[in-house]
Length: 326
View 1: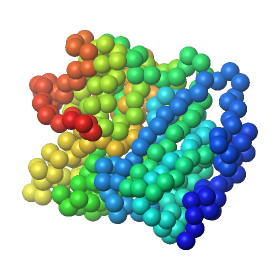
View 2 (view 1 turned 180 degrees about the vertical axis):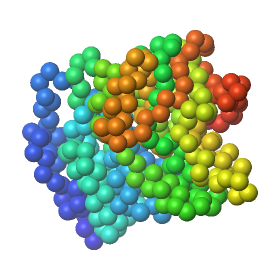
View 3 (view 1 turned 135 degrees about the vertical axis):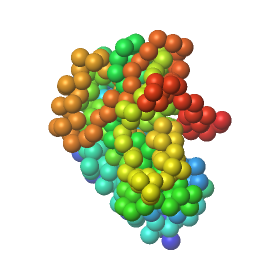
View 4 (view 1 turned 120 degrees about the vertical axis):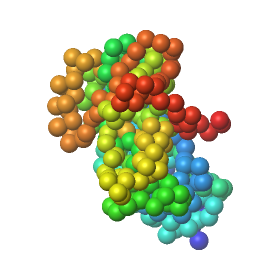
């Protein structure tokens, strides 16, 4: 059986041409681009909390990195370097090789280098620190939203939560939804290009990890205003529940709850003045990524998020997102 350092050398020591010094020493040495600010984020994935124990290790390798790149995307930063710390219950080289394959596939896709990290024995736990670059004063933040601005979200929020419900046996999705939803859960696509395209257009941005309503609430709280979400403006999932005699009201209700509060989407939610709507539409076309205007920022208690039905009446949702300690 290979030891700790042999495993690192075999599966995680890759060329890092943009680093002054990569893996193998006590620290990596990095030289940021002159005049740029560093954006730094750390995210942890714990077995049984963030992913099911039987998750394909290749997909898990991808997701472990992708969720961190999503934070950089939310800041409009260009990803550069990452470190990986992992606790592993055993030195299972088949599992480690597949995990590394997925991790480095994601790194190659988004142009980042793995410059260091640590391994130890313990319950399966994976933690990445990611570093990106952004021009001074240009980072997208959560505190810039203003009353009257439009609220936007990318992609199809809710698919990941539906995929989790499918894997847990809570629902039986009709074809072809299981494949689509499980892929959204296990192999999210961090919206890095979108984040960079929104610099100078979006007033406030966040990535949707804990649920759309919960994360939009963070924007509203930090910006000192409230948010109004219109059900009729949400991405359509009507075809999921069928129609006519085959309409499944229970599945439609679950799909809506997943869409608003499910989390694990890693889409971007952002606000922008209405005058930028045409520019945002052009970004959507260029990136071939749907962007949905789902409501507007309004005057009200800081952090309050209200959902309105098609008749303009408020709808109460008791569960608005995930909280590890709630």
